[in-house]
Length: 328
Image (cartoon, rainbow, N blue to C red):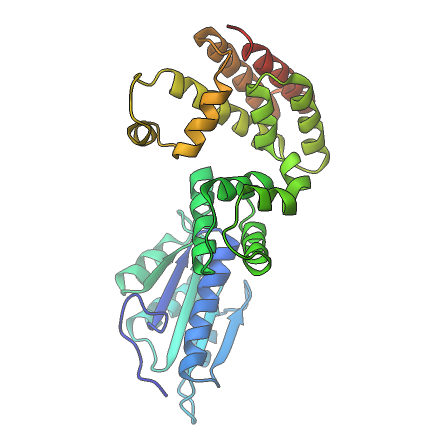
């Protein structure tokens, strides 16, 4: 068998700590360790413990020396929920990890079970970040990374169109990237994404926002009703509306005469998005932006429990925003 790795960034490190609540990233962290262990020893024994299966004494049993000195991977899920006695076992193990065994702790992060989290870090565990990707920019970076990992090229517009079409589910985004990478020859562009995911794109929250800020009331309402009918969460629609209106306000207030690259850095937008927002700005005024932002805030409060009819609140916001787009 291969010698035990001591590198902190190596999946064969004695302990790997995967921290966060993004299920796809947690699963990938486990898969990476298992793949590395089986590359070193095809007969590696993998024990993937479901929540509650690690009881006091179990870890000692799993990590006890084997007559055949086999490599083993022990995966402990939801480590933040372990009982006090089991945590003592894990902390004791961290101080003297066994040879040929890799322990993988999956921890949600946060305050619960923080003592174990701190102990693993203090012991020098290799750490993998698996936080939820709540920002659109993070999901966009994820999609770009998926295409790069597949050895494929995708245009910025294609990556954005895919995020707009699929939404926030990383598993679905990863699956879509894999499908496009396998099916398409050459670079993946917006036309390809539209052809594969046209139904999803039409139902996306960003399509609703785009039609609204362009002043296309009927199309925005149609996209909204279709989005809600296909399961898009109302809070995602208000988030997209807010982003669309704020982008117009930020670009409108940017210093004039700036070069495209400087403007992109100043606003934190890719150049292609600046071109899109610039087209959408026609007809907007400062007063219109203020009115639209108030409409978004009211709708957001309504869909988060402050109103009795979230669908009506969204329709009202869309009509107000589309009207504001023609306020100049």
